[in-house]
Length: 400
Ligand code: CTP
Image (cartoon, rainbow, N blue to C red; front, side, top):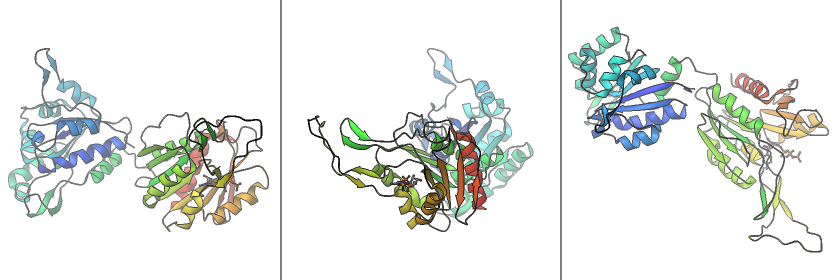
């Protein structure tokens, strides 16, 4: 989405500065690298600590960090570092200084040194915004190539109603993605993907698990992210690292943890893909201390877990796309078709364990996709990333 994009966010003295915390979150969530420059009056409205924590970078507001050591914030370097400077909120005062080239703070010095595009999101009271000075300043800035994100109308902090409210952070983030030409076919869609096995605990040292590596689900998460989706990846115990740019990344252990995490979020999602190999059975009881071996045999009583996908299928909305996986050894298509219908799915991805190089633990996979409308598509053996691309393409086609 905004991965590898370096953005300087200038925050100036306007009550809308509180929105800049949300804006930083949106930009970070989209994968951008954000450095915040706060002006002195901006600091009256929002704390450097909040912005530093959210942006994961120190907030810059002075030319010199430590006068004794001579450490200073090099505005020329900052200006050259950025792919884009976004000043949001931009106060009337900052807009005027930008027009005049008044270099009295770090933000202005960086603005004057920058070669990258500059955007401003003005925010002020309606009369200040409507004032001829402000309007003329905006006109001049526009003529010089500065992109102005027009404020919206609504209730203002003064209690008056009119134009002057800073555009919403989500809206600004979307426009940035659009600008960087990275609106993908799933932009604006919330997608949940599950991956990996589940571990059903027997005692503190033992569990029932399976061989799922999580690689297929992680590959889908990355491809969906690149297609613009806001991805929540919920994974069972795997040795894979969190992929970049996830909206949320949640590690779970058991089938019942996964049920809770998925169903807590499923209402907001437009697309849900259950690629996890969820255990169908779990021990009826588990021992809090290690079970010692004995001479006789040990039988563990198991009970059924909740079928997450079936639950999602029963509560599916018309605008939701539900995708399941089936791993079969016999009567493959018949079994997968049964699951597609029973669980009210739009699409099921059938992995055959009979194909060499496909399924658990391999870097490749060979799948057949079966659709609600009765059609099916066979795909050749491919890398899991390519299979993920095929799947995301099919989902995009279902959506349109
Ligand atoms: N699934 C689930 N919740 C479970 C079990 C499975 O959501 N408790 C999902 C899996 O993520 C997968 C699909 O259901 O998308 C697999 O269907 P399932 O009927 O469980 O297949 P198997 O586990 O292979 O079971 P069986 O073939 O024995 O019916």
